Length: 316
Image (tube, rainbow, N blue to C red):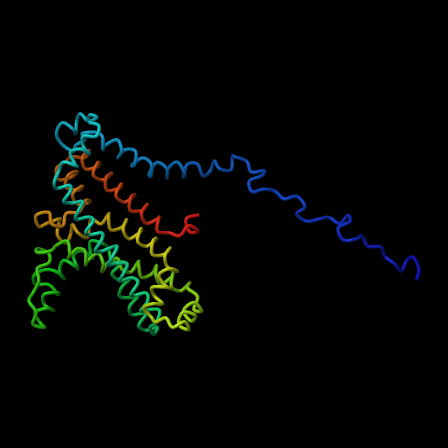
């Protein structure tokens, strides 16, 4: 073997150039000037979000009004608007009705119906799943005003509900007059159950099948598997869905306004309708804005309560 037959190769790592030998952290070498093109959009977005919030905080502590002295000469009144609200019986009536409306239609109705529909679709034929999904989502995507008119005609004296009841020999109902908060709660359940169904369907699809098989081998029936397996695994989805449906229901305005207008005799006047009445019907912008901030506080407290339901690992 001659010297020309052998080639000397450097040992691995002994002088061979290494790729990525010097790691750079994200952002090294980036000039701050690169953020300048995004600055106008960021300021515009901040103005649209922060501006109304700050202006609402200002209005809540003034006697601002659409007409009268408050329209031309707005003055600072401190917490007077809040004390007036706490002393108003109509305000507390609206608070109670808002909580009842949220409990019936969001916490119980939408979540239980959404969970039931999700479980039904998980075990049904594709045609059944497609039909149920189409019907439920159709109610969800309808504009709120359209849904309000449809449900008003359904619950009206000569509407579809009473026609159906009388056709089977049952007496007709006047829910829009005798129990309007129940009527609007059912309407909100019908319209909002699709969101809960989609949330729980996505959560159920992520549950491993072998977990149910193990529970079945241990002798657990369908109810026990649901309580001991499904509910604990869906706890983050349940807490998240409860929070989102509660916040959405607290702000429902158009559906109730179209169906009952808050009546009769304020029997369905939730806080959004009470706020609208004070701010625009009576022209008290400052007082109406204070009520809006109190509604925001209720939503924040509900969100904190729901977040405490999340497991510790999901809070990080």
